[in-house]
Length: 313
Image (cartoon, rainbow, N blue to C red; front, side, top):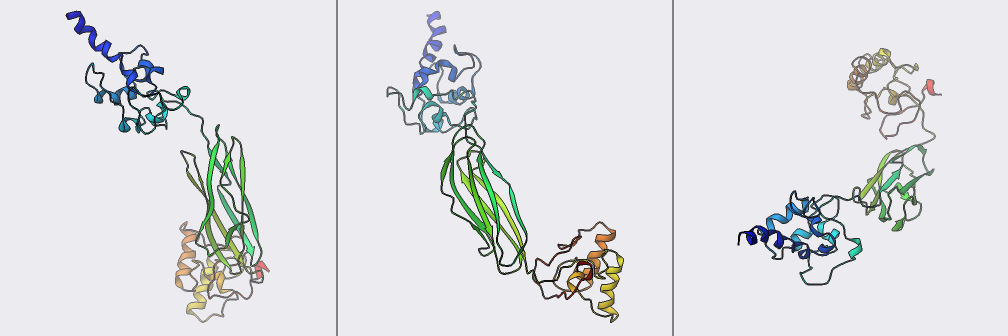
């Protein structure tokens, strides 16, 4: 009797591989680090342990255990054992493809598609009004298995200034496969525009990728200037602050390009521009918005004019 009691649990536990779908292909290795059974458990074995009584051969497989990813390798226990939803019952035929069964207690590295988008951001700089800028964006599968591209579309708040040259249909990308999405930008209104190209795929790590889009449009007939150079001498220094103060408080002649004096790009000319410029010059404050350090047109519409600006003529 003593011998029977000492071996009975071991004999009973040998039935457990038959209590999970396709379990006989794995034997005791699904629950134990030692394939012969006994000793330290695998992560799947740790999840099974609370579901069974010592020495029991009562069925324990079901949806709860099937939907777990015990070994945290990105596939559920059910996916690895061929029964994703946990509906298999003891005595039923082996589900799924037995040759595709993997161990739910040992983390595997599975072949998978992996999306990469080039470039990750697109900028259309200084596009003349009415002209069209076009950028090609590559969607690449850098993984070692096929990758489903579910959808490619635009997300923007710029009133339709961005568009796809042609629709990009859902497709399956083989490893190293490439889809090219061509985005164009065109507008008749100057200013700065922002949007994004949204790409949805079956990449487990990055199911959604967004490529930021930014564009500036300008009127080619507009005067080019440098923001912050209020004195229009080609330099950014304290003379620019003095020039603005002179116009505001001493009745000095008006500036030929008030836009250049709008250092904080508020659309108005006041003492805050002086403070902004001095902070930039002497206290490492943020620089003025474009155009700054190079000649350019104002990408934002405002009421300030710029009749002439000698350094950029």
